[in-house]
View 1 (tube, rainbow, N blue to C red):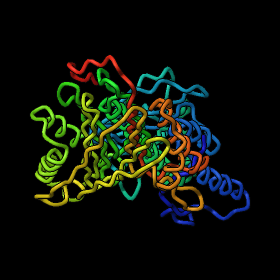
View 2: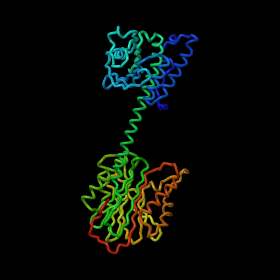
View 3: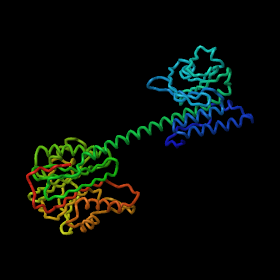
View 4: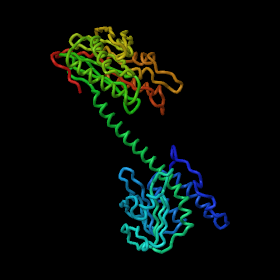
Amino acid sequence: MDQSSPNPIPFSLLGDADPALLVAQPEQAQTISLLYEISHELTSILDREELLRRIAERVKKLVNYHVFTVMLWNESTQMLESVFSQRYEDALPSRFQMPLHQGITGTAAAERRTIRVVDVRLDPRYVSCGEKVEVRSELVVPLLLRDRLVGVLDLESTMPQAFSAEHERLLNILGSYIAVALENSRLFEDARENQTRMMNDLETAREIQRQLLPSGAKEIPGLDLATAYVPARELGGDFYDLLPYGVGRLAIANGDVSGKGTAAALYGSLAIGILRELVHDNEVSPAEMLEQLNGRLLAARLDARFIAMQFAVYDAALRELTIANAGGTLPLLIRNREVTEINVAGMPLGLLPEAEYEQVTLSLSTGDVVVFASDGIHESMNKEQEEYGVDRLRGLLSTVTSADPGYKVAQRIIKATDEHTGPGRLPHDDRTLLVLRVTDDTEADFSKLPIIY
């Protein structure tokens, strides 16, 4: 099918041809007009299979042939490779190669000049490629782009002296446009293959990233936990993690890497790996954990990146939640439909050495809900450039009851930000939620380690 090239190679109508080659006689006006139409049409086609078919059809209008072949130059193999062949009106499988200086085609390509043979029986350079046609005459036109070899057109006929000097002149002119068209097609195919490969790589990376993020945790008595993660692009810069932190204790991390896309996702994965290593080795306070993580990220020497992060530890036996914050949004506590910001702040990770972090400890009761939200929730923007904002979020959370399960709360927040943004608008940033709801578990067993899934 015809497609428009983003950056087609331009070419003047006559190229470097001498206008005198086109004899200004009234009977040749139709030929010149046809030549113009063909050159314009071919340089607008980017799909190679369609282009090769059209080349064969359009050349046939100018020069009658019995066998038509297009061979392209392969720089890596240093061979001419047939990519299209047609005998009479039937397309043929095309699978042969020709080195430079071998056969008429190889000679024409090597010498960068058109070769017209009136009778191949009298030319020792002729090499039969196995067609079931008794070839008598041949016309080979090198396809050049700024003196760079693109390939050759090879026309063959069962009749001797089938190709004239006028045929040679016309194909020399048309060959310039065919070379441009084939190069545009190659560039388009390269771009399409690169895009397909990139999309496949991104899809694989997205699946790996998704599997890095846990869905939830079990064996945490009295805790209903829900998560939500909506990346703005194929890969997200937000991340979260749930980690066993001793018997009856669960660590919760919610991070937001500066920037977006692949680099942010990789940095987030690095942070997850370091965090899991640190948690495995010790069970320090949340503030100390952020200090250690900050030091490790600074050691990675990625100066252009930093991470805003909340880190908390829930103790099921004490019903206490201890929170430290490294530049993330303030967590929200919902108690009896009253929403309160938990005022704990600190420097983002990866910016300054020796950063110190404060922490707060909340004593929670049955029905309390704590929401950790990334700034992508607050900054969801509508077409009027209005952010969803913390006030709207507080208003929504004020309707949450103690009976509302955590996943319902998370779903309502995501839906509300979607509706605020409006249909058809791309999200401004990744959106991540961790919702903790304290339940009444009178038969709790606090002797088990949390199970992450």
